[in-house]
Length: 229
Ligand SMILES: [Zn+2]
Image 1 (cartoon, rainbow, N blue to C red):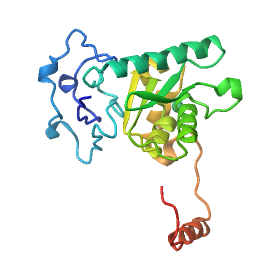
Image 2: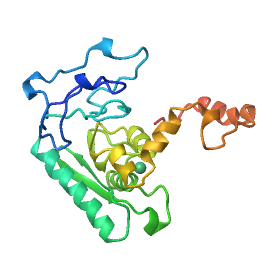
Image 3: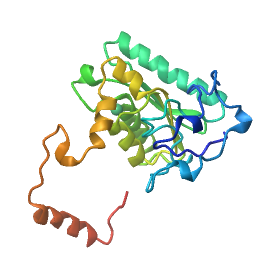
Image 4: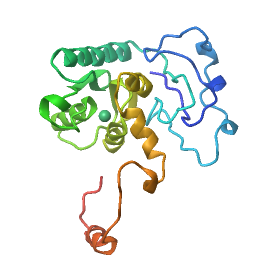
């Protein structure tokens, strides 16, 4: 598996690589041999977060970028992504949302998940969360080292955060948050909310009793045998 270093924020369209998430080139794409390992630093604003390939090879904040950087095609990737998409379609037939997820390590499936929000009355039961929980239960750990997450759609902020927390090595997705928005899902809206100052968000947010809350942090910091994560 070859990977492509990716810098994901405000990438000028001319410097993105056009391609499908299945790795196939599309019209207008640069030749694979011309694919840069990284984009020029000068194309990025100061303090731009950089996601390197071992951590993340997919779009995070490319609101202005219209294309997704892709990894070099791998038969395992396509097979596993097609399974994630199959799970998404099966979820629809079962009455759930159109999202599926596969978590794999070394090309082998560890766990699968599909959206169960309405079926389980659980707003957190997104396909990725379901799959992460199943994978962690199966592996008996809270971290998914060396794992790749195949999501049928770009993860929402909750799921993306969970993928980071699980320390997955890599993320691959098919549809985009914009695609999801086009059929009424809030992923893109929530991403945009996160870009706003806390006080400007739709969610009324306040802070209270910070000094007392910090007591728990002091407890943690003074616990020598704490299990960090
Ligand atoms: Zn999600």
